[in-house]
Length: 341
Image (cartoon, rainbow, N blue to C red; front, side, top):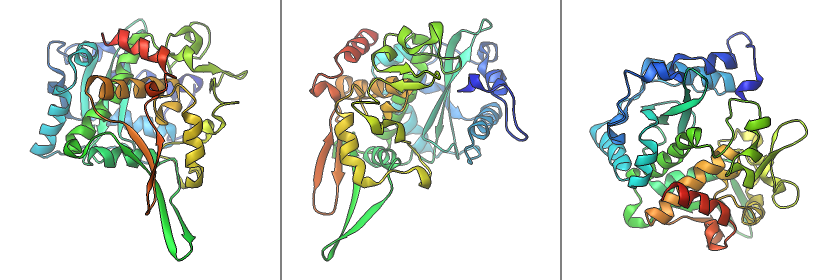
């Protein structure tokens, strides 16, 4: 957590440098932000200030990638704008007042990034979003499957005379809509979920200690699944008895932290007994909300699918479906309905 580090090592920014960077200040955006501008018109290449900040953030977290300017062709730009323009009006109304900028670059190291902006009293005032263009060229199902497989090692084993390859397959679009635009739209929904949460009082601030008024139990969404242990670390209410593998699931994991794909079925079986909308949503209260928001809008408001399978060369097995099919996410569903009414 940024708030837990007060000094830096040589070559590594301090947490305070990130929290106090000028683009984290509302004053920085006052002349740049037009709240009447359509959200799709806020998209543009990352500025030098954005690249500087994201580079500092990567260094702070120990990520090797060094962000740089990206150039998109006209077709790519058109898809990006149309993906945002096609969002439900409720989503644009929620995000419009507080999403100050939407930027693209390369070498971010992950698909997207949302960062909060604070007013002069230290209260969250909005956010800016950053996307890695290198991830955005994929079709929707290819991108979703790629992300879903990042916690798991590749698995090939001999079965008789045949080799069987296994992987997780995620379908967030039917064939006719399985394109780059649809991928960008789902990715944008996740990051917009983060942006809305920064000012929406649904989960704790990640920039403050998880105590007192910032404890997960004090927020309507996070209290449903999250708490802290005796050391103040985030834990989910499912970790001990329902989903003990959760703490080992690391997305975009380096080789040494990847889980054997043989564990996939058990992990999704346990996930299906929780109120997390996706496996990615089980990582933290922040991604819990962002994924719930994205999947709810994607399926319930846009009428798109969300299906997870384990695929080998012979057949596929259904692993997971949205949690409202079993009613296990009822309380979270009600909060999302109120937010997006």
